[in-house]
Length: 602
Image (cartoon, rainbow, N blue to C red; front, side, top):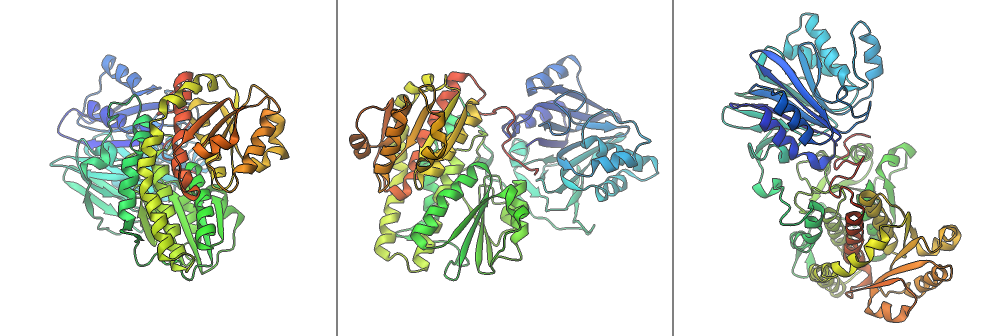
């Protein structure tokens, strides 16, 4: 959520800041602004809505200067207004901030002698820093003293009047990176923002703060000690933002899935064997603890079936935001596994820290190897999905499933639950999935032909059994996220325990059901729906379609796949249903309202 960029450059910085902020639009935002220093004077421009509005402001009221900071804000404290937009300024200091300052009310009370003009927590940071300047502290000292009084999560960049060669950057619970150029320096929420300017990046560690000048960056740790943080060269493809001829990033990312899944599997499979680092060992594990948020959580629910059925490992699956608050007992033989696309999800990171000293090992499945969750895990497993821009996760979810499936096969082998022949058979099925996904993508037109009618519904139910139950949850989430149609996912057997009361001809029911051991029971549930004038859209394979017979509103015939791995294949129609329904609704597919790509606050 939100995006930060800072530039100490050789050229007029306003257009550079705006262009960098455009690369952070995928995070979600509802206002934007920049501040610069010119001839010692600190000034800013802000606007509500898309960055085009900020560009219009800058056309009519230009902002000069070769030093500046910028921000895209997703409203938390106070609505999306120009007054509440970042950067926030108090006298000689301007601040941009990602995160939440939890003790801002206490700080406001302490600063009651100052005049506040916004509803935000962030203004408190600027006012506090300005107060320290009033007390005679220098700019660097005022910023570091301010940091000592902040509770909560933050990535911060300070810009000062009268100082065109200094940005103070700090992170605690929210990512921030420093970019290195020739006589220029940069600050950004991630490498994507900085990629047009530099590919040499230093990621701040938790609690770090830095004094950034054109000569370089002095970085200090949370204890105020000079810290040596490595600079890393980021591959160009890691920061590419290109729709590749598609109308939306989400469409591009859906169609990238065969390639990225193949890349992912190739990293974890050699021949007929799953290969992971030596310290990924489930031999003595007595329980799996799987923790994540949103779509990643549904990937964990799918993985629960795999770990329990293949490896005989009991699994607890928790939503990260609930996990540590129920104070679950954690065995010292447990493996705690955390899944996050960004690797910065605040709730997931907090849950990881809760079990760090309790579980036998902490494993993370992430898309950003340099992220906080990756760095704080005993073992970090990258999913190799590449940059995902669409807020509704598609290819990252696919590759999360890919890594989790291979992990479950590894655990089954290590625990003696499968032999070499069964492992080879499962790997063969996994390797076939990119081709099957291509076949599923070829069904796009058939899927799209029914979404116009689906887009008129006010509520949609998704049903599934076994590993398809979490896919029903994921399908419902996708539809909610980008079409704004109310949708719920249920285990098919739960239908008669309440949800069937919702069924009538106005409520479409999407049933995800490959022909497996539970298919007959699913057909019975479908009959219950159709007996009440419910419209069933059945997604199954050829055998399932033949057995289900007539009476459905629509039937989508998918390629055959081993039922245990069906979630990877059936993710595709779930995504395409949501995408084409959203197109008919005319909603913002890549940046749906109220949502952020990277949720870095609790």
